[in-house]
Image 1 (cartoon, rainbow, N blue to C red):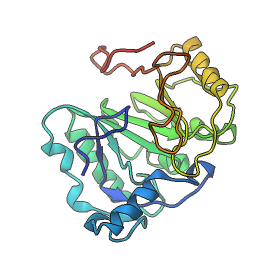
Image 2: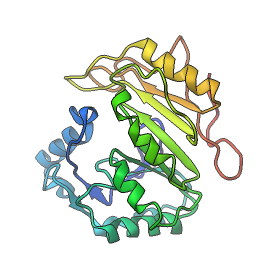
Image 3: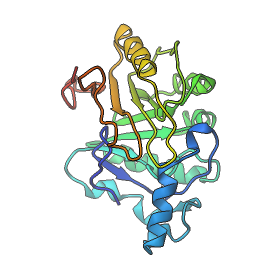
Image 4: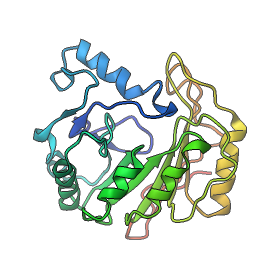
Length: 247
């Protein structure tokens, strides 16, 4: 499961849980759902339940077997803080992340309330990055919960970006990822929306990563903004950039 990834802002994916349910407009054309159904049609045993929530306890310690340090996107095919995932299972995931201290783990959730409920119940090693997804101004409230989480890196995934976000509260935020939607029914993104976020990040010294314009597939529109790549990373604990900033 995912010791390499094509996702530009990570190196690998780790899915001790697969499957999810939709809770906001950003979920409408979920790439993970499309992929899960395709994998079920290919008789992949991990996706025998399609996109229904499924725990994979045999995968809980997988990152411990990867000796080369890497950035690992946790539950790229689910949401670690989904309401149907038992609390003790979430704690087991955190235990592995803390044990595998040579990796950096990137967690994303739309369930910011449940995230806040667990924030004091788990150990936040410096290698655990926590993010929330925000697709439009209506969901900026998720950031309020994220900003109180004691993770060393707190980040936003604004993908798919569905509307202008003229005022992004960036206090206690260490990284912002932006991207357009991809897939047969992708919704449009406007360049000015992306510039607006980029400029706010620059004004607040927050690393900005523009992933893609989107389109029929993730590579359709490329990733250039105003003729250049914008791919910055937050600084790890040793103070050295994991990857060079690109402007």
